[in-house]
Image 1: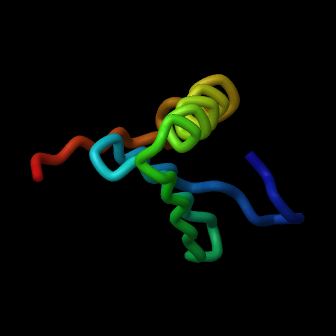
Image 2: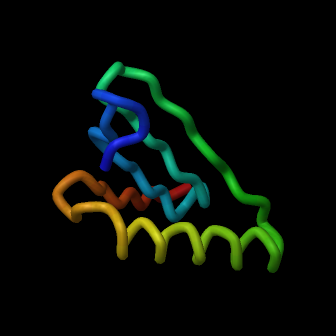
Length: 68
């Protein structure tokens, strides 16, 4: 998946216990997005995870689950 010329998504971390997605690109830049613990946040998180599963190669997606 290419963003800008020569920059690619290298890894995506989906953390279900934190309701967050972290994206790391080929330049080493990373960004984490977190959703609120509300119905609207749950809907947005589900939509994002579904889009990632449909559009991003599974070998670069890591699913994280942790106990609190």
